[in-house]
Length: 311
Image (cartoon, rainbow, N blue to C red; front, side, top):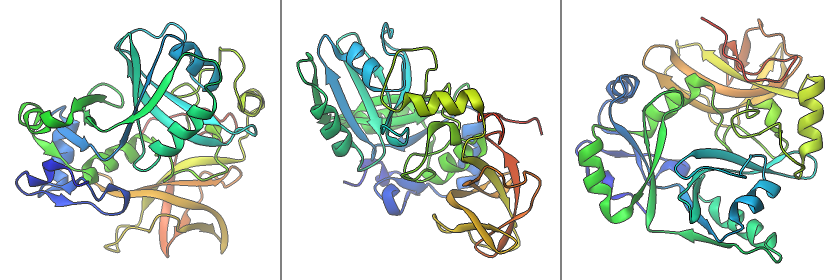
């Protein structure tokens, strides 16, 4: 369902999975600068929202996911993943507990599958899992990766008035890509393990009990050298286009990975996130959709940890 905030002045709808919200409100460069300055908000109301209630919810999530949920304080946001037995990322979400229920948001269209999987894992646990349509995710700039708000849908216009100016997905995505933060389903594929994309620490807690897929995560974390690595690409700006998601990344005519998200940054120009083989030389200039692309390390090829080298 299209967001009611598409009625704001200058709003232009996005495309693909982001079609229900605004791509921009007239100037995505100005909107980026506002967010960098700590001003405004981004409409993420197209993301799916789910609620997990019941007295066992935190211990249950602790046993199923990559995150440490035991003792999670009310009001503290956290990220978590659900992995396959082989350690591949199957679901990703972020949420907050209010002392009675844990409410989370996930990628558009991913909520039903996540709820279905969680329902199968309930057994005798005292939890209730449901998709909710009365809350919408919003994002506001702040320290680090910013902050999320969950807003009643009937209060979106009031929220926009108080939190403005509005910024669209083009601005949000450009700053996310600059930070080297992957988006599940766009910058990942069915073979992705958390170590490849920098989710260790952010969405994966290394000091907790057993969970599905932990053996793979722990082995790669301990020994290093993940099979692939997330990289920030600085694209040749001589062509007025961005590579389509899924475009091959190649070196000397050999395909070595794929591009996920791409955007135009207000200072860096065209940038993208790509998942490439670990042994691709970090200094090599790659080719993406016929365009040269220089690399900036996001995940170190040796240790698999999320790093941001000083520019």
